[in-house]
Image (cartoon, rainbow, N blue to C red; front, top):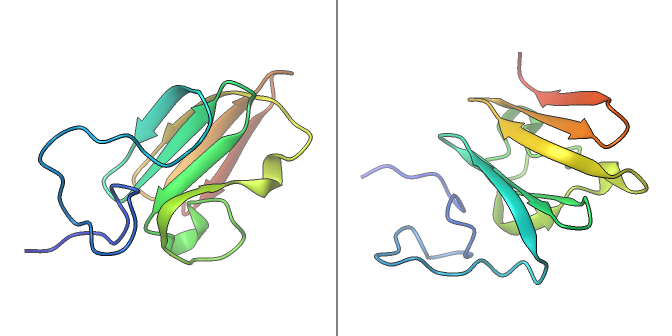
Length: 106
């Protein structure tokens, strides 16, 4: 069976969960977006968190490292994000001031 490391966001050694299990974010989340190999969460304070496969930089951390747990996207420091969306190998964010930002492959 093939699976993407960290896709569930619960850390190493958790390739499957049989019941809904809260993610270790520590913040109130208002929106999520899931793609085949990565996910984004938008917190109430406008911060963005990502996890899953990091190929092509689609997690937004400036590298291609997989993230087994949700990690805050520091590139948005000082900006309030209003919406997020995931594509197959890219991600998008809409800021509160109306800017659209994209990252990843494509």
